[in-house]
Image (cartoon, rainbow, N blue to C red; front, side, top):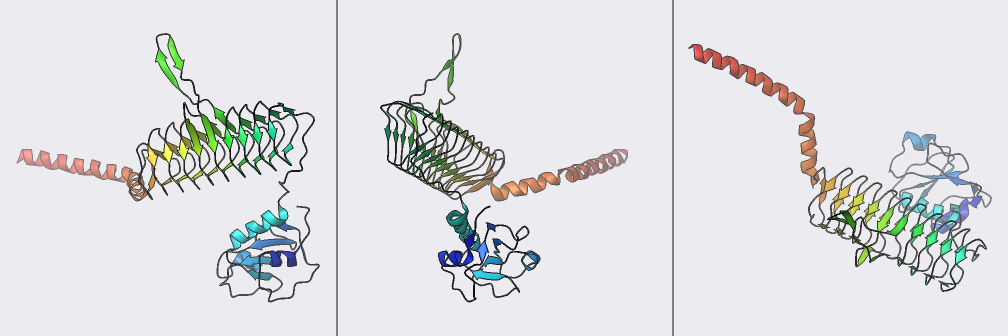
Length: 351
């Protein structure tokens, strides 16, 4: 990082009660973990007692919990409500590259004359914007992206390079979409016909509500007739596939390589862990958690935690795994018992 931030400015930003003297020229040049920090870095610590990492860190300033009562020579320990969240706010405020629009539209982009472009919109090199597109104020569309006919985009949207938004996609405010993502591709629908498989045409669209973030190389298919819907605040990881007519509720988290089949419905605050799968036409109610590498084949009630293939209650799943790990010993015991029974039977027959 090439930043030079006054520690005093960070203290003021976090509203830290300053019980020590910080010189105005004390500069922070980066954020780092305790192990990798230099004397120019700010770090954080989330426990209530000193550990070896904290004792040995070279960081000269560390955010700690409010109940931390120890001290370390030469290190500023700054008490905050939540060190992990607060250092995240410091990163956002002082160290992230600006994502605000510069209002520049590249002369290499292609924008149809019917498109309605808001104020202070930035459009990068080789972007294609088709007919009847609407783009809200302060949005950024980076190089190489494609915005299909009839797509509507809200305010303060950030589209990273090489994103594809196909026809009639709707994007809310403050949505972030990373490179390689395709939204609005056809759902995977085919029916057997007399001369082979016949394509089921997809006439619906995709709606992405406000404050959704979609990371790289994710695909969200358009609905057959209605909407594929991602509700407000949901976060979607890399390499996720969301099929046609899926609905995902508010503030859900879909982790890497998860897949959701057509017409499945997920409630609010649902978590799908990495490489998990949901079959079509079922419902995962609010606050459901699906464990990593699991596959759920039937609807799941509110607040349930399920794992395995097919997914079952997580506690039951853990017991089943423990039993599987003991299976070879159990087989040996059964084999030994069978041998004893066989010998007893022979003895019984003789008698």
